[in-house]
Image: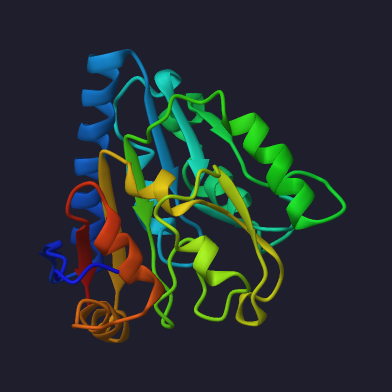
Amino acid sequence: MTDELPHPVWHRFATREALHTELATVVAGRLRDAIAARGQAFMAVSGGTTPGPFFTVLATEDLAWDKVTITLIDERFVPITSPRSNAALVTDKLLTGRAAAARFVGLYREAASAEAAAAATAAALNGLPWPLDIAALGMGPDGHTASFFPDARDRARLLDPANPAVVLPVEAASAGEPRLTLSLPRICSAGFISLHIEGEDKLAVAESALAPGSTLPIRAVFDHAHQPVEIYWAP
């Protein structure tokens, strides 16, 4: 962690619906800009319960979705048939309507272990158009983002801003099952990083992460992002 306090950009909304609409507008604009600049756009999105309504709004945006590649910030080590699969959420909520034309590259690979899956996934992701144009993050009540859990085994490696890996396996008791996650540098090098949080409890966690000396995992993103993280919050 750096000694200088990070300075994210806050966007506060009266309603969650207003947040979803504005975030979808901003993300769609960033995708259009990337397509105009280099002929394609590359975005990583999060799973969990929070982003579903945002995905539904984003999917209605009129843009060249066939030039967009989407991957995940992190994934549980479960197949897409599992109700806990982040890939299933993206398929159901985002890859619909106009957005169905996007290319989706998930993180899960059938393998004997999360470690073996991470190696196979990294090989598949190496050919994608890095760096990310957009990293759409979420955050848990314990301050984790991606699969950087506070109790993760090998936490120092996960939060290493110089880690050369593309994808890392994660073992943490609080995670429920093994996970796969993009590395911190791959997230922090994105052209636009949003943190989408809802509720007073998440607001308190985010503010705590910004306090001097915080060791919450999300703080590593605040500290090492190549530009200020943009926090989107609604009660």
